[in-house]
Image 1 (cartoon, rainbow, N blue to C red):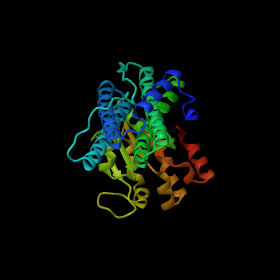
Image 2: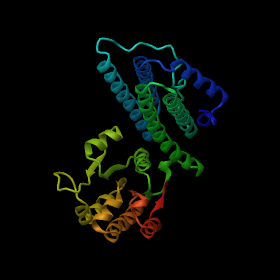
Image 3: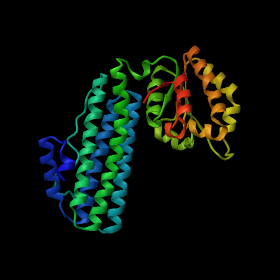
Image 4: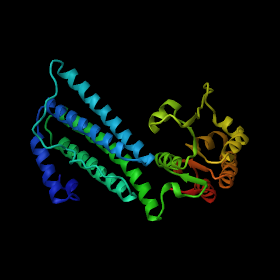
Length: 324
């Protein structure tokens, strides 16, 4: 247990011990109740953070976190009612696994980084607490439930860290994401590419996203309706485009990107390259990058590095600036 806790401050170690001691081998009903109330508090916390934030990427992130916490709450509550149909969750006498919230003013990059770091620490603490409870529990049903709760918190932590790392990398360059020059950029991470698109929209850019995700799912992720979403489908689905049709639409994409103030994100470039060949896919990207430079627009390309050969990735890097 202490190996997992070794990096925590003495105060957090003591707090974690209190949580574990308070929950211990309580019955599933009480553990579910405890988790339900924690998720309810987390929903409120992230909603308030979203209200305070005016940076588009971070606002969308906090709304996502609130919505996902609400989903977690609903799943846990549904499980509770399935197991105990005649009862309601009750407050459990145990310290909350989420540390006490704070609400910064969000006036500087430092404010955003501080808030993200605080949330990351909270989610990581919650994850590790549930993991330790899972290891400590003697009842199988409790072990499983604690493990599921730990995975939920881990997913939140990883999402927060991506936003933090992206913003911190720009702070190190003494600039903001939206300060980058018009041109072409390569993202190994899709989520970071989406955050970048949102922040570039602060400049009044018209957004287009070509994605393997259907438009409904994509817009739900962005938490807004003003994204022009195009589905890259491997099947001839109505309203979607295949990789082949995207390649054949190069002239139209050049014209679209040639309009002033456009940001175009093409996700999963490796899918297009696998379908149509890397050379043909690259022959689409190269002119789009040049058009973006002269038209004050932005081309964002997301590609999985391990899905391309070393040579192919090097060619992309020679044309596009990597942001990881």
